[in-house]
Amino acid sequence: GLQQGKVFYQLPNLTQQINFLRRQYRMSVMATVGLAGCALPLPLPLASHEALTRAVLVAICSGLLCSAVAFQFFQIPGMVLSQPQFAPNKPIFFALLDALGYFGSGPVFRASGLLVDHFGAESGWLMTWILMALLLASGAVTMLKTIHPILQQQQDQQKS
Picture 1 (cartoon, helix red, strand yellow):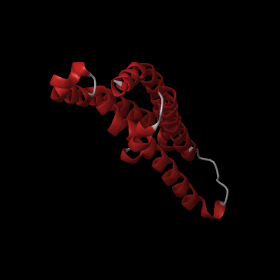
Picture 2 (cartoon, one colour):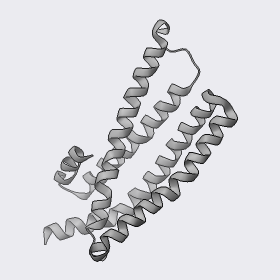
Picture 3 (spheres, helix red, strand yellow):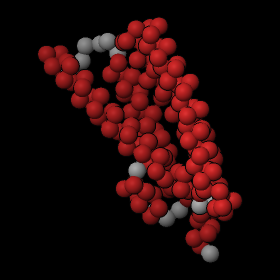
Picture 4 (cartoon, one colour):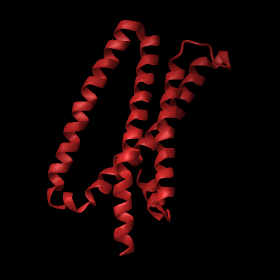
């Protein structure tokens, strides 16, 4: 997230920054779908080393997911806080982010537990990862629409 922030802020225009964010969100959704695929009870290539193959695939997908989500975690709050209306209220803004994270994650974790409990480990985890991918995709659509004016204002401030 921190390394990618340098790359993001060096992009010369708004279109490239939005495309960068779009790629990050696409990577997070695809990695989550990859984790769903790892939950499928299908034999993998190299069947003699199926557990190792599955573990390597999970590690790769998890790493890609963490890398893609880290940018949003480390950079997006700073982008929003750079707006003048939030300057005097930074602690309140961070408290709101924590509350929203808790408010949003609680039901997702509960739904995940219910899916795994009801459908069993294999099908339940598959459904849980698909749910996560859908949530990430819907969050991406929302964020890409929301962040555009913020990035535009940042670029306008840099030019002046």
